[in-house]
Length: 139
Image (tube, rainbow, N blue to C red; front, side, top):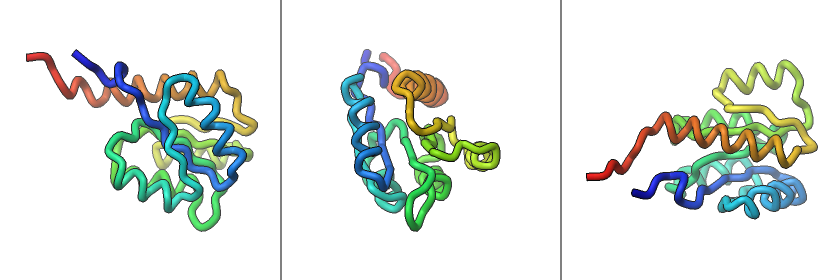
């Protein structure tokens, strides 16, 4: 039986800064994740609407027009339990409080530590998959 952990998992990375987006992609792809890139919150929302196989989302806090927190709120209207991680240069107590109000799984400060990011992603995916249960039980 194939489980979600046997399939390649897709990670949506939304950041308006090309270099930040690429550095996150360079962290996740060698670990076996498929990176889906978005340069804005609006683009990220469109991807979640169109792409069935987004398993996790990484959102930059400061993006023009729509912040990472606003993006999380809209994404959760489409896919309620999608684990979302906020990446921010301003991990203040207020930002963290607001993030948890909109059900962000975790807040990771910039510059991003590869080990912290991957550990947090794996924990978020495990919790997400456990909450979904086994979608394809063996007959």
